[in-house]
Image 1: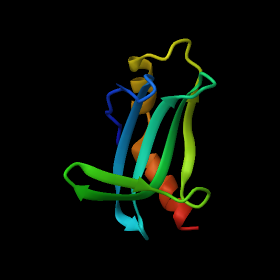
Image 2: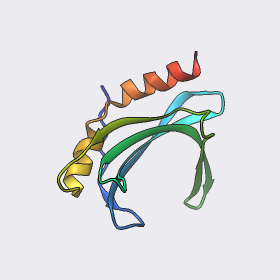
Image 3: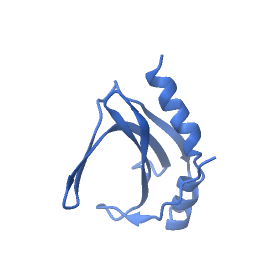
Length: 112
């Protein structure tokens, strides 16, 4: 079981969030990575999403991630309603995800 080990950071909106990008090797067609993100939604719920897509590294610290809405794998994999969303709460939910289990779901999604 592969555990995630991300640290929470404040996002552009000032809210705590975590993000981990995993390589899918071998790639599935053009899909070469899985992005797992944990963030507080406007509803106050803490949600962890997994999205498969294509990552391109342009060098000099520049990279892009793209996916096709309603076509590529995109699933809510954790959802909670903590009383307060702190860095520790975000990290705990994010790092409790079993990356191997999610990768198996991604492979099953594309191999149907």
